[in-house]
Length: 533
Ligand code: BES
Ligand code: ZN
Ligand code: ZN
Image (cartoon, rainbow, N blue to C red):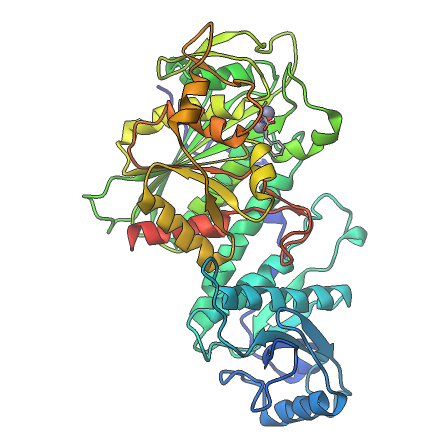
């Protein structure tokens, strides 16, 4: 068995590290405040009328003079700002020490929703609205005022809203076409919410890294390049964490030794070599009595459908068919940066699905690592083949739980749109943890059924033990999950189908159009909750 560590050559280009979208500056406001734009929260009723008492948060670090002049302006002009939106005000510099002040409106009332922490979600929306407006105004210097009077962790949501909205994917554009980088800093670096702000930055930054990986085109992000990018990124980070990191890069010969023939069948039509990237994270203080959590990601760097080729309309977005692997890598990065106190093993299966004279074909029978034979009825149902071998391999660690993340089906988008990640799980405990994590991040999950009614369908194959595409009319996401269940031995398993959420068309307002990096923040919170319930 060949294990390679730090395969990267010195002169390899690392795009991710080059693309710095946001910087956090440590300095406090100085005499140059007049060139900066400040964002602060104001509390409003459902119509957008500022609270008649004091619309500012108690934690606000703005001077009484500034607050007073904003208040009288709002009153005089009868300004309304609906919760979750924002408004920019500008004054001549002798009255206002900043270039502009953006008011991010948050509801003054307590908000209750059984599914999601609406307060935090509204904060993300309001602050992202401020950032978007300032970005349209070509402003780059932004200072963020403190909030947190009513609920702990609000500065985390502020930070997420700002840093997610400030992201922009333009690394292949010439300088003159790039949007200027936005510099975000705290108005008061020593404020009580600074820890939450930094944590929110890590969550958003990891999601942004998943967005970048997913957005990168498949000619530039081949399976090998994915490995290079992720390894380089972790190499930069590993010294700063208490968590010990080991990286293993498994190449084709090793995959053959392991008889990962289902994964290899998908890769065989492409000239790009397949890889399995393993990240092993161990916190020295992790409870030795708790077996590791294994995260598995589908990393199809391009899914043309293979011989069962996709219609051309749907094809370009399939450069993002490695969104599951990107999300797993980003989650591992988050766990590392936030010092998650546990053991996490990440497995990312990286292949390209292409039609060629060497491709696997409909009607082929392949023999997976687990010993199950699989009849391939549709080469476009390739993700479940990649995951089949990885899920079987995950048993090597006798894990306490296995969670896989995959752009597995279009059918999940039919069921849930872009609102929720579909989760199929064998245990209520895993679901509760995922639901709780999604409720706090706003990137939510919805449970769908694992049932023998579907399991039977995928074992109905004339040629083999299983059929990768039983060709039923409905329940495509459920039959895909049922197929995977045949390869899972761990009693605690969750499968996240992100086919509906990996791309943002316009559904989530604090993310721009393009690859979403979802549900990275939810998975990072899940890892934290898993080891420290
Ligand atoms: N990667 C796709 C699923 C997908 C497509 C997700 C577009 C998001 C957007 C997957 O490999 C696939 O092609 N699935 C097929 C399965 C079918 C052939 C049984 C699907 O969902 O149509
Ligand atoms: Zn496919
Ligand atoms: Zn696919």
